[in-house]
Image (cartoon, rainbow, N blue to C red; front, side, top):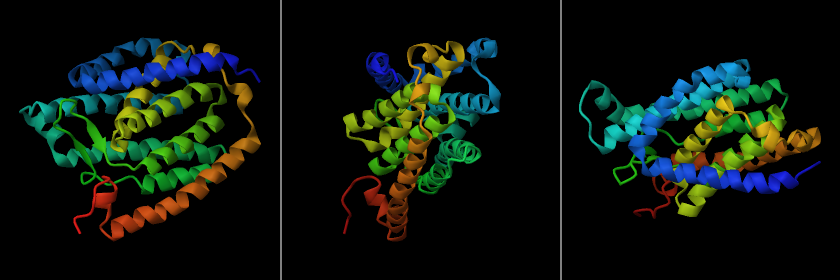
Length: 273
């Protein structure tokens, strides 16, 4: 098992991804038009870098919503007028982003089942169950960044990270190292900012950037091949650990909703009582 090249390439890629998050958070308008223009790279996808139904569904189910996130940020922050803009500004439209996150997890969960990674698949199902509801726990802010905010907790963010890493370890060992980079960048950014609610924004832009790069110029098997890391026993134990970790979180999450504490605990603010 050779890991020394990864000691160099993985930190470099994580730093690049952190820079991408910062850039697209700051430049909300440019973000919208950049991701719209990214669809013009479609001919490069046909050159063999995007193979199989899962990859096609994955890249389109990430890039198209990323475009819509961008234009929704413009609509809210600039208070745009018009039928389409009004629709994007409507609080109920936040359910669209909730649904995309739900489907993103669900499609990987179904793939986990086909791979026999059952405990991790169960973890994915419970992650879907514990996504904070829209629009109550989602919004686009009116500050200078016009952020898409989802009030996930730091625990949920971590569980998503370890679940997704386990999924990639099973589904595509060759790309595990590079995928781990995008997961770590999305995990680290809200920690650095001390704002767990920025996790979804960080995840959106790191995943979109990674998939676009893979679709156009798939360099990762050459610079970050991790196929030799695969171990079926590690995979099995990892999935079990993920499931064990999420079960108490599900109970906590449901209790927060039942006791009406979620409006405070999810947002990390003190109760009015």
